[in-house]
Image (tube, helix red, strand yellow):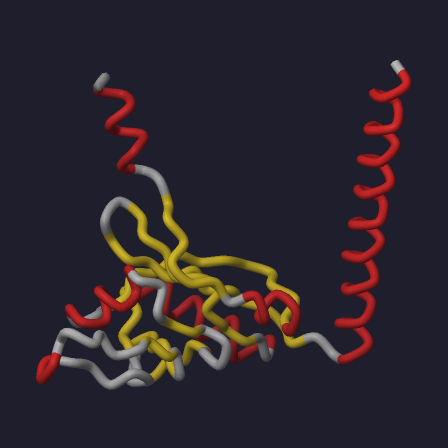
Length: 167
């Protein structure tokens, strides 16, 4: 295998868990990548995509960023060395990034939610979304826009398929 091909394989991202609900409930303005401090059984569970980000959120406490309420299932073969499924996990960010996040969230009343957990270059990372919670009517409007886009795509696809049959 060529050197360049091996390098590209190492840069691939494999999404382990995704929080689809977050994009529905929040208007995400900014995305940040952070490392996460995990124990071995958590890594094994995440590699098997045995986690849920649905109720998760990020807080800043004592100058540290913490991932709260994220469910990472116990690894069945870890026995006594298993982890607590919903324990708080430390996010690995630079001090200046944490301060910047803390001031933005405090001033503007924004929320920080985990959007996805993925594997990048052999390390597990968390994508954090910073945004404002949507109100009910905003959720309905965004759903209408998604439905309209899907209807347009279907119409274009059926139109293209119809032209190819007659040609």
